[in-house]
Amino acid sequence: MKIVVCIKQVPDTKGGVKFNPDGTLDRGAMLAIMNPDDKAGLEAALRLKDEYGAEVTVVTMGLPKAEEVLREAMAMGADKGILVTDRVLGGADTWATSTTIAGALRNIDYDLIITGRQAIDGDTAQVGPQISEHLDLPVISYAKDIKIEGDYVIVQRQYDDRYHVLKAKMPCLVTALSELNEPRYMTPGGIFDAYDADITVWGRKDLKDVDDSNLGLAGSPTKIAKASDKVRKGAGEVKTDLDADGAVSYIMGKLKEKHVI
Amino acid sequence: MGLEEYKGVYVFAQQVDNELSGIAFELLGKAKELAKDLNTDVTAMLLGSGIKGLADQLAEYGADKVIVVDDPELKEYRTEPYAHAVSSVINEYKPEIVLVGATAIGRDLGPRVSARVATGLTADCTVLEIGDFPLNPIPGQEQKHNQLLMTRPAFGGNTIATIACPDNRPQMATVRPGVMQKIDPVQGAKAEVIEFNPGFTPDNKYVEIVEIVKELSNTVDIMDAKILVSGGRGVGSKENFQILQDLADVIGGTVSCSRAVVDNGWMPKELQVGQTGKTVRPNVYFAIGISGAIQHAAGMEESDIIVAINKDETAPIFDIADYGVVGDLNKIVPKLTEELKKVVK
Image: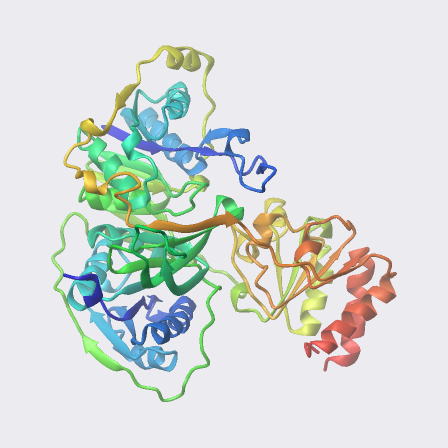
């Protein structure tokens, strides 16, 4: 079985967001990590490899530096790494990104494609389902459990108040929730091997059946009109010198004033 | 075909078990505002099996037209038949705007449809308005009017971006539940009902549903609550949430919590407010022992009135609270409950 896992290098928003003096995000100061949902997807693939035997290929699109997450994935146990990088691919929205990744995946054989549900920088959850559409594959999003039965993949698909057990014929694409599993650590031997491993690097010319008009910033249907750091609601009153009785009568007064009570 | 031939604001009227989801009404409320600005009408896309009867309810919440796709293949949500139906409606009727809820269903359906009809999709929007793109004229670039401007948070709520889709139609957005306001229903309102069936031919992409497992929950939906009494790490223990429950009981509110509380196992995940929980906008939000990290604020700062009680006067919750008191919640909350008992019947 051949499994492809799509991963993304993202700034770590959980480890504390850093700002420049002018208030914009300081991406350079933030740690670059493998996106958590993608890591869960990779772990799911590695468990399928452990259980059924599989070749696991990790694919990422990004700056040349994104090679780091491919090596991390290989140190965890992935067999091959493919980096899709090209200046003309920059500034892509989810449409152009999914078009690019689909163009890369058309070059390789797969039974199962796994992506993370969403990346912590964009939070869109769109690229996985869009890749499946471009490749005309069945998609199962929000997977919290993945099993293989012959030519079929059996997945628990999470909804708000229920889950569906879905059965899809491979090839198909599954998007993974980070709740799916606890990703394994890199092994020392794995790190050593991954450091020397060959990474395949593809550019624009290596993408199959992709039109230039659908790539990069220019090929993105959505355009940013304005971006800013979030404007927070202004502070109201804060009482710092009230005892418990004073605090209660202050709150009661406000609730009455606002006709809550 | 020219972009100007695309007309009307369409919403995906999500239903589960033949019951319309709250997001359907919220989208209609917003769609009505957008349609007014564009001088057009609002159409609900209603998909399912045996769901025609729901059309009147959509009319009461603002739909001028309801396109009904009623087919046994649509009984339970599955990506392919739903994507096929919505894409077919779009190709047939050519709406200029399509809104979908950013739910576990909509965030699967939206991207699949947008890729199929080859247009952009903006995820998880919190503000939608009609305006110009670019916002200000740029020499040498045409400024397009009457564009859908879609605003959404990114980077875990740390940044906010406004996005347009100037050259493709329809303009598509998924919209975060709990953010848009539904209108007061107009009793007896009727919509023009159009039945449409594109035909369904099952293939490999029609994934088989082997089993449906409902996860029973006995908690109320915090997104529907008018008053939320929300606790954070500062509450100290699972047991101590009882003082919040007592306050909620007396004032007719519902208890919710921050992520730290869920992580500690004090409260279930469905009561969590914030970036990775639910977005709420009650009339009153009591933030008790909640520091108010940006991820929490993202889920509650649209509340009408925010009352914060925290012992740390540097807690960021005080930056967004309307009324804040610095003090010991263990003393203040029970006293507040007692005082409220005197005035609330």
